[in-house]
Length: 162
Length: 141
Image (cartoon, rainbow over all chains, first blue to last red; front, side, top):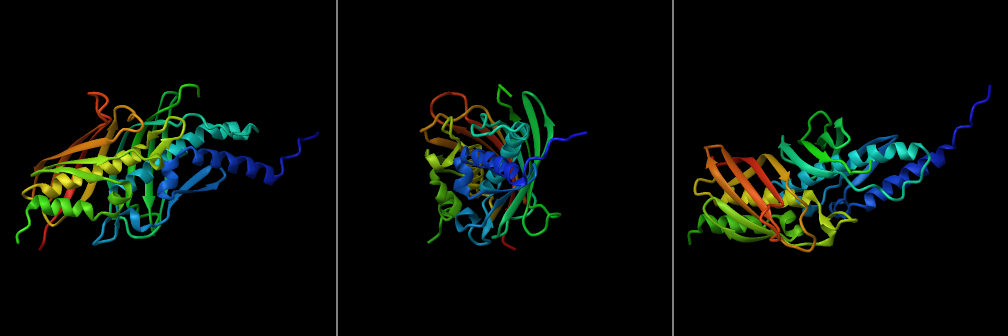
């Protein structure tokens, strides 16, 4: 019995990473905030490195609630889009043209504690992946993953042709 | 010289680094209501293909505007922090337009302020987004 030779790991990594780069390039606002994406297999963690211009409360040096909301929304949206293009990447296709991004219908953000002047991380979980609508839960933390400082639930409209 | 409540609120907003970075400007502040403008900037685009401003920038506008409305309220404390904020996106903002948010603090207790806000881009009667939120009222002890 013969088995197909697995693809070299570097080929797979390059294909996945270039798809992620294409997705990032699609969202200038993520670059504006300085959001970075860390990928482990298909799992994405976003990073918001601390910057003085993300502060909303100068006395506490706390992150601006709007910057936090934006970080959560970017995470939810990118993770959703990533879930759409992942099967295409795995099928061996080069994903240079990312499909239209999911549109936010609503986003409800809970601020659990004030954002400290340091890096923040976020992960999103797709709670419902529908053809037209999807629901996403996203949480963000700083020092301790078990103590999120903000979380959000959002609903998104999926692009037509997917 | 005694500073008025609205002066304090206006000053409060002008010192927020992230509000400045986004180019937010306070165009009106009253006793419990505020209007803030977000000028179009290509750095804030959410999807290159459409050129539409990212929802996150609208969130930052809404959050700031709601906070300003709270700070302008006659019964406000010394500071405020968002407890929760929900935003509904009615439609995409038209590229190259300034988005204007209007927020109203419609109720305040000793510790919590209740706020609603609407954002328009001037191209339609339909708002770009609406928001409702609650804010913690921090009082000097």
